Amino acid sequence: MATEHEDNQVGKCKVQRCSSTATLKYVCSMEGCDKAVHYHCYKYLILKKADGTFLPELEPSDVACTKAHYNFIIKERNGAKGSRGNWLNDAKDGGPCSMDLVLAWWETPPNFGKFRGKDNDGMKKIEFGNVLATQMNTLTESTERTGKQVVQRIRDMHEAWNYAHEFAVSETGAGMLASDNEQTFNEIVLKRFPYYFRLRDVMIDRACTEPRFLNTDNDALDRDSSADEAEDEQTNEAVVELEDDDDAEVEAATSVPSTPVAEAAVAPVVALAVRPASAPPASGRKSKKPKRGATPLMDASTVAMLGEATASSKSRHVEQARHNKRMEEINQQKINVERERLLAVSWKAKDDEMKYKVNMVHRYSELKQAGMDDEAILRFVPALREFIEAKNPPSTPADNESD
Image 1 (cartoon, rainbow, N blue to C red):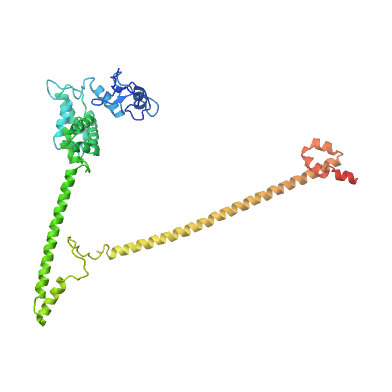
Image 2 (tube, helix red, strand yellow):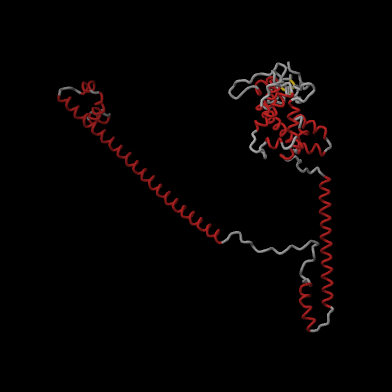
């Protein structure tokens, strides 16, 4: 039987959509996973398929908390049987196992990049798999390893690395590193993929591995603030120097004797250097450069093309409006025709009813001439009851009194 989990409290297990409250839980059989699993959840949430059938159960001593773990366990169990051998336990005479060969190939640039389609000169994935399969069948106890199996294993490992990398660059992972909880961070990452750190240098070129910036990075914030303050101080000093130079120019200009030539030579300088009294004092920051005029984004040919497109669009709208109006007129005509048809049908029905009543009157007259009374006529033609009752209405009390 599967190993019992230490958490035997009443409550849900780690399987998604768990609704059981059983106390007995088992440990997931996936290597490195210690999640608690109810057997009921394992059977009816993991093994049960959408069509109501069930996947084959694992060994009696195995359970799984997710279908991904179930598939991984199935592959491991199948790989340990037969002449193919297991990926980790098929080493021969102290040599490398199949997994060692895969990792060594992965760590050698640019093998994985070419496998993913980068500068591989048209070489397909199955060709890489065949090369590795040949090495495994030669150097390990596995004798029937195929290129297809190797390609699938590399894909599975790539997905597992991405799964671990997703946590490593998340805010949770970055927060653990920021709080000096590196040991827990490493444990969680290695549970997701045991070779994450070994392959990280190779995979860093294919994914962003830097954690997102957190507000807990106080040192970085302090460094940024200090840099900003230093830049502001340099800016203020430059502005002060410029103002001092302006003041010196103004003083030199105003001390020249008032001669026509001197006034003509100094006047432009004074006009440029003296700041109006109504102008606000310097703010300590560099003045903004004057804005340039609008840069034309379209030349004449582009404007002409847009004009033609606008005219064409307007023409299409006019044509669409005319078409819609015509369709409304046609639909109204159809409604009128249908109304007239229904009216004609109604008149035909009334005409047929009148002909029927006249015909019944003629039959009544013929039967009377044949010597039949009303009772005999009713027994012979019950449909004449309405005519006979209309011909001989029942007497009322008022009629009896008048008699």
